[in-house]
Amino acid sequence: MKNTITKTIAKYHKDKTRLMDILIDTQEELGYIPKEAISQIAEDLHMSEVDVEQTISFYHFFSFQPTGKYSIYLNNSVVAVMMGRKEVASTFEQELGIKFGQVTADGLAGLFETSCIGMNDQEPAAIINNMVFTRLTPFRVKEIVRDIKEGKPVVDMFRASFGDGKNASELIRSVVSNNIRKIGPVLDPFYKPGEAIKKIIKMKPEEVIEEIKRSSIRGRGGAGFPTGLKWEFCRKIEADKKYIFCNADEGEPGTFKDRVILTELPRLIMEGMVVAGYAVGATEGILYIRFEYKYLERYLENILQKAREKNYLGKDIGGKKGFNFDIRIQFGAGAYVCGEESALIESAEGKRGEPRDRPPFPVRRGYFDMPTVVNNVETLCSAVKVILNGGEWYKSFGTTESTGTKLLSISGDCRFPGVYEVDWGFSINDMLEMVGAVNSEVQAVQVGGPSGALIGPNEFNRILGYEDLATGGSLIIFGKHRDLLTDVVLNFTEFFIEESCGSCSTCRIVPTILMKKLKKILNARGVAQDIEDMTEWGKILRASRCGLGQTAANPILSSIKNFRHLYEEKVQKNKTFDSGFDLNAAVLESCEATNRIPNI
Image 1 (spheres, rainbow, N blue to C red):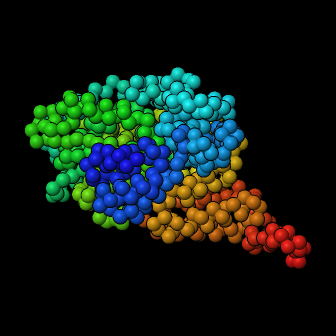
Image 2 (image 1 turned 60 degrees about the vertical axis):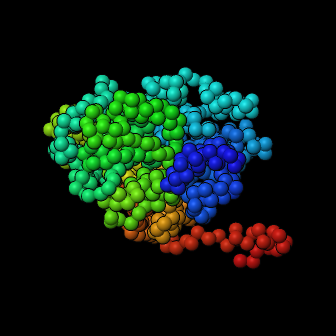
Image 3 (image 1 turned 30 degrees about the vertical axis):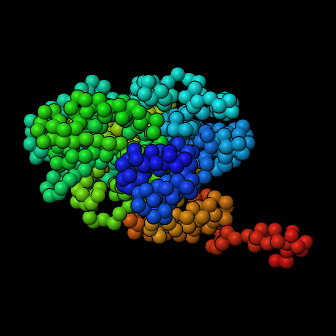
């Protein structure tokens, strides 16, 4: 083991800021990160063991204990539950003879829960040793467990043909499907890599920024900050070095569009990072990808290497003397909060993904305290199309306040889940018709993932755009047969509790209190005041440091606002107080142990 760790550390030049990579490689090589490895890593990197341990403990896919030769992570997202996860989970437990969170006695297989893995269009889904299995059924699980017991390589466990597009390529070999349903300017399959680079090297960096500003493109991650303005801020700051980050950590349940772009148009992402680097004067780019997409690693590294060979990356790009820019891939290790730009930067520096206090913003003091632009996948892809076709062309799509197109990840109760590229200004009614969901059978639509809003039929005429319903791209459809409070609101609330970094007391405490109130109502112990309490207490979260904490109450608050009748139907009538505490149940065990009769 010592030699393995030594080689891993040497691979990253004993650089403690590459701790994430060192831990990922160690976890994959050993199946866990033992105490001896922690001590050696800390000593060789001149760090304290506590610093190493706190990074390990923060991320979902790191473990202090063995996770089995075959590590199985079954997604527990809302859509997975809707599509039959319960039966799949039960079959895994029965066939392996263990419960979730356990490893078989012989160390062969471990079974674990995990949050949304970016496969909402093909659920239930699981990750086994970094390979994704989609559309699982109890029968399929029995086949997988049988193969595990026979010791088969994971890739030989697939029973279906490989997925469409590049998923079937030799460097991916995945059964994942793209499910691209509607193509627009960004998803245009006739895109020619390198054309934007050839164009910008004939322009001044300031001219590139002006073109981006002219397009009025705003960040596609949900916040909607003007992209050109962000680049301009960074350009004007004097610094020894600047960085471009592509945020491909799409951890919002229900979102999977970035997965599709990473698979089918990775060169477009790369070119967007190069364009941004030229515009702001950066020399290094970091493509931060969620760990759930680790199965794309070889393929993406190959894309980057070919770009270097074509002089689209590296020194004097495109023959432009002094234009030096390269990209490296940084994988996360399972932490939703790392989708927040400053938490993402912390993670890339090898630390816990805890959001920073702002200001200063990353554009001034980001990666290694240097000016850093963080844009998401779709934003950078759109920037390339702006350079190729012009800002005015881009403004011809969408609305006045929301220019261009938007990629939507649509899943749930519809005939055609998948990725759709539409103009901003598209209504929810239009969307439902497009994906094969009958309006009269739809109870609700979750717009923008758990941090967004749960809306009902009376709001289906609203449009997608920053002036109305802003969204990072996740839309989940719920039919009238779904239990919104149990299947959706409770699931989302538990997700936020699990994914909180715990730094802010508001985010650490309030969601748990809200969840207990919600469960009290679901267990028929609630009263009308409980609904009012949740509405008021949810406001406290606005004091949280980052977007996760500030929106952690949204599942409850938006459902109370738009589906209050569901709560009112469950609370006790003509009763103003119920603590939810059952004294008889509390003393039952002690009375049985002492052979006493409760006297209450």
